[in-house]
Length: 330
Image (tube, rainbow, N blue to C red):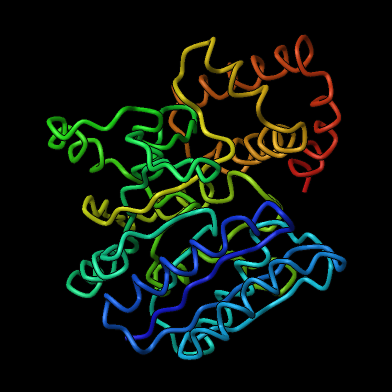
């Protein structure tokens, strides 16, 4: 079997993580015993930013056996979906059977990659495996006992969420977590291992080009869209509870309470809120017809609620309706 791994770096938001990320990735690959693998790093930074390149070059100088290939956007921010589609195409061309989507703001546990691969090798009905993602604070170099994600879940009305996100991890609730993990649609965009044959089953063709992640989403919720397409075809994902990865998420939701909702939103940039707002509408439009009657009612209520919210609290979101209209029209 051959494994491909892909990650995206972007300006200074990635540079502070790369040293620990690459070190933990190498340790996890060494522990897995894999020798047939390829790692793609996609540099999404502007032309004047060279720190990420320098970090990676220094690491490769010390680890010449690291099977790494550098890709670049040539100074443009291509978002999330397009770079990953390019990396997946390269992985397929190289003969890879599995593709690990990973953010560079994570730390691998030593056994995580080995544990994620094993179920896919033994069960051909699995399309993906999701790790148990826990939280960490990179600035303080602290691992937290907070859950970041057990994978993507789905509620009525196309509401996607990270399972158990923000909860304090308690070992005595392990069976409960495992039960909740049975409802995972697909891995979180932060970390997930996919069978490439499964991605080929849900690929979309636009302008004579394959898109595994929908490039119209640019960034945010493209993993939810992919998760729904896998779910719609009944392609299964398994939560591998002992495969632990630590993630320093910049836009996490601590709980669903109204107070924490507003606290979380104030920490997100306007751009991130705009992308998320727009792309949630894209999901509504794209998958509306596949919903049952009650779910369609919930979607209509959500669309109205989001409009009223933007009108009262975040008027800068109103400009997104032009793009939403064009998406619906096309």
